[in-house]
Length: 108
Image (cartoon, rainbow, N blue to C red; front, side, top):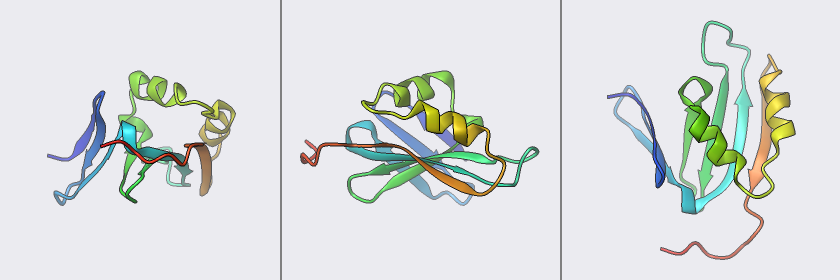
């Protein structure tokens, strides 16, 4: 079933075709926001979560609950000003809102 699942361990998006995108919180290395000119009747703001292995997950703003945003905002150095800028953008843009500062390897 298509949809987004956000837990304390991971974020997973299942697409209509059955493909699964997933990233765990501990392997998260970067968060971007992408805006499109497709709104207001279609999703036009997306969070892009990128993992250390090149994996990732795209979360439409419509699927992001307050707990998800609070989790992102708890990341050290998360840029709330860029989130606000992204939310006010109606065109095709991309915003880097967080990047892991440490190059330390991810523990498995």
